[in-house]
Length: 88
Image (cartoon, rainbow, N blue to C red; front, side, top):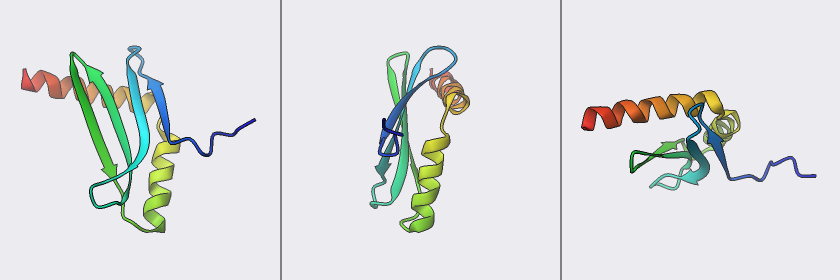
C-alpha cells in the first residue's frame, strides 16, 4: 500500500464543501512552490507560494504541502470570498 509520498496534488474540501486544489509546482523562476486554487462564483483564484531554490526551499515547500489541511482550505476560502467581495 502506498504512503502517498509521491503525491503531487490533493483536493481538500473546505467546511463549506467547496474544493481546494493544492499541488506542487514551480514559480516563474523555476523555484519550488505550492499552488493553491479554488473556484468561487465563477472566478478561479490561483495562488503560487514560491520558495528559494535550495534544500531549505524544497523542505519548506514539502512541509507546507504536507501540512495543508481543512483549516488552511477554510482560510484560503475565506480570503477568496473577502477578495471577491471587495472587487464586486
